[in-house]
Image 1 (cartoon, rainbow, N blue to C red):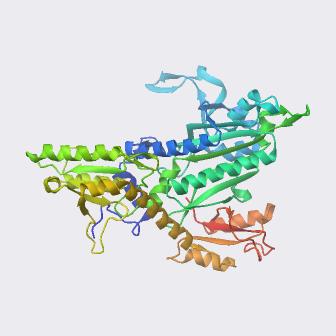
Image 2: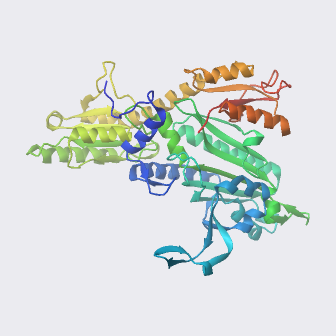
Image 3: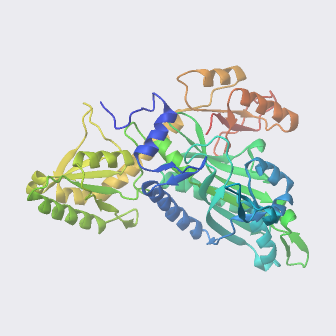
Length: 508
């Protein structure tokens, strides 16, 4: 069968990924290295992510706010490990004015800032400074806030949605009286991310704790959700950090406890970004383009009238308009159905394929014969072809489709999740017990997936040796799954008694 994209996943997964983004009109290069223009369909998906995740964040008691894009360098210097972790990625503003010199615009030497400003790579430092002003007593705690913002990290190797110099995200920040309360918050938000990924993005994930070398700079503990892409690589799709008193000490976030003594607050932070869209593409896309889960699709049903510039056109448009209006009155996933009438002056086949490539869950085509017979032609994006390779376009009565539309959308959502879940569960090898076997697993041309191996949790030079070996094999430690079986043998890397199991894989 002939596919809509010029390159398939099997031929070149990286090129296929870029082709999906381009053909689905999701994003394009901006003229600045590592930065992208997010086009309406791509941004519409991000708006859906924002809406659904924001509802879950607010349901846990958090409030939205906003902090400055520019952060004084001195804020970072107060926390050595944090600044060291981000030093190579920081964009810095040093001047506030330009002048003409030799026909070019250059920074004015007289306009040098007294203190350089860092373009926000993350906001622990500036928010910590605010917390130090807001918190005086135990009665002021907990502080539970979130912001939706852009951040800048000067990535050396960029890829749209996955690693860009500027990206969009939400970052939550909280302060608490006790370690137990802060850890409860950390795990609560990890579960928010897990449930959001699986229920809304149809993205099955493994939730767990990051090994020491993978922790967020300055964190006591970092937890993540890891998703498996179709090429077997891992994508870190969201993180939640227990920061302890690291930033409280640096930013002087202190409070008077009930006994009148001064204590440092226990803090957390957690975030999810536009990287999730990259994960959506690589988990759900096929050789015809994107497939968007109905809960995230800007439009769940697209109606394409087959116009021929004749007397039938008005009747077809009226018929399609009535169909869209009826759909918009129905509810699915506790929201009105999002249906669109595509009236663009283009050939119906071209419009159909444009929506196939964008991944609209259901595409409806209506021609003169459909109007006369009271029918519609239904194309489900999750199962595009019949066994004979032809498009699986079903002609059904208009009333029957309206009665089945919401159930069909729910079925598509579940089908996409089930497909991805089967891939995840079927590609984690739990039998590997030696480094030679681990190396062979990832060296095999047809092997795609992760390995779950025994782990002794080494530190210091022993951990450095493990990391060096992994880098040589282009592998990373992903996380220690919360639901993994207890360790019962020797660590695959050190030979010491294992204390837990850790996921190993290649990653984005």
